[in-house]
Length: 420
Image (tube, rainbow, N blue to C red; front, side, top):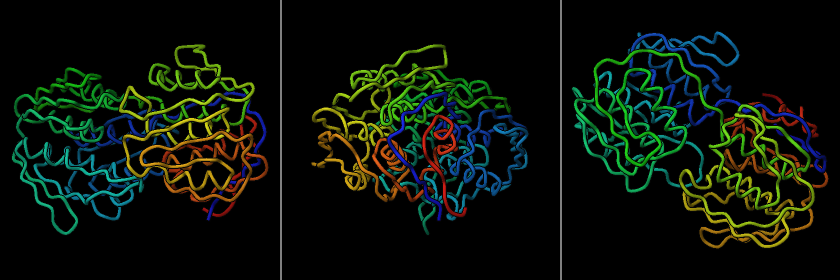
């Protein structure tokens, strides 16, 4: 078993380059199923979730070649299977993104019910109800969703709650449907917009990207394209907070500052000095003790749930009391028990965590329980006095490309120990 050993208390200094966004890469990879031919995808992060998704595409008959470190050539012309097996889908909820492209292109899909992080119920009801409105006949049996449709039809679909993967799945379905589809109360995340732009380049007719109403005019003529995955805003936010946890000064390059506006506002309020130094670069500096701020997670452009655990680390050593409220997932405070092992003073009341800043955290063995919790424990190890051992790296490696190497390059005392 691999683990990270972190000797905390050292300020960071240098430049961190942000990888392509996992949450943009997965739906964009799924979109290659919509049209036969050769796609070229750039800035694909080398992550466990991406590897799992590529394995799933191969199971469906897709041919994949890595031409450079972060570039893939994906040939979907030989797509010959409509079944996404349990063994792959159980590892990652985003595998459900193949459902709509398979139904739209092949007229049939059989996809295992998904798995992923244990951070709360994340049902795929939005996906299924939307496909039913578009004329698909659905059946759930033996742990699989089976969908059939000779050709999907345009529909007016309303999301009770904005759903990122639901919006992405149904937007892909609508591209090959007959007539117009309206997605109302749709997700506005940058990753949704990135997928929409790729689909537009493929020939899809889509209006309203980045708003809560997306209109798609169906077509029968989609083509392969070359595209680039957008930088990962969650990774960028995590490294901004790494500077806040450890102290020092970092340049974050290959990021999109406008994707982080709400995060930057909160971090500045907490006392970090952050400025845009180029179109794709941020500089962050921490001097002295941070100030406490209250956080409430919200769909984009609100504060992202995927950075809630990381900012809790900063609040754990901030000056006063802060309240962090989680509105997206009901079970996303599992990292609290591990942070308390490091000396954090945190009390959970329902959907809120009351964090009383302590002067120091102290190193201890901790276990990651999900993807973003694992990142928070690494940040806590950077901030803590003494040595912290972080286990459960299978979670970290699902969403952060070479995090230990990137932190080592900017002065962190961190090393990965154990066998693969």
